[in-house]
Image (cartoon, rainbow, N blue to C red):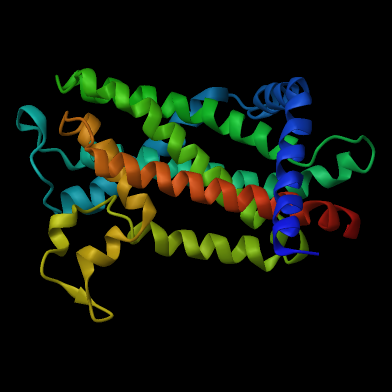
Amino acid sequence: MSAEKVTTADLRGPVREFVETWRYRSLIGHLARQELATRYNRSVLGWLWSVLHPLSTLLVYSLVFGTILRVAVPVGAKGLDSFTLFFFSGFVVWNLFNQVSSGVMRSFDESLGLRHRVYFPPACTPLARLMTTAVVSSVEVVVMIAAFASVGVIGATVLSLIPILVLMGVFAFGLGLLLSVPNVRFRDVGHLYGVFLNFLFFLTPIIYPLSLLEGKRAFGMDLETLIRLNPLTHFVDAMRRSVYVLEWPPVNLWLNMIGSAAVMVALGWFAFVRWAPDAAEGR
């Protein structure tokens, strides 16, 4: 068989899987609504937890890094000089990435019992998890916008939040798909990913500005250049420009975000379509 025929066959599978999954879009919507309805079941505060969790993190980091360690942050639009809002603008992006990638990774394994009883494309549950996480994260985004508006820092650039967060969701979804099959076969994957996220958080300029790394070196490289190799850095930078500095992200940032999201979701989808059926049969 020629290499050209192999490539054509390889491409046909992911496209066919996408078409089949699209036919089950009503099921995806039902699964998402069901998860949203039961997410805070038997909880007194209910949906308030979707705000209280990120706000508690915001409070802790603001106290430690903003008040005790006094990390200096750049002056934003209209003379804004607030570590809390500087951190919040980056944390919203990080939290979306964390919740989507981790949730999608786990969702495939959690759905195997149901798929043994009722057939549906394996990508349905990861897509449903993406939808529910997007809804929950939107509450956090609204709180962030309200916080900036309360200090008078708001402008038309806030509209760029929508494509930035969509691209971040696509990137995280692709990574979650890429990890979901190994997570079924090896439980260590989920635990290792949690450890990896702890390192990645501090390798992303969320609690510090990139200017803080100027002139510093690590692994024989300029540390600022090293941090810029992290795809999440571009998403955080774009978000900060939009809400903290009130300027439109430049073209190079958009190209970096679009390229990162496209490559990751393509890798994740191809890998998931190729190995998900085998993983499901092995359970």
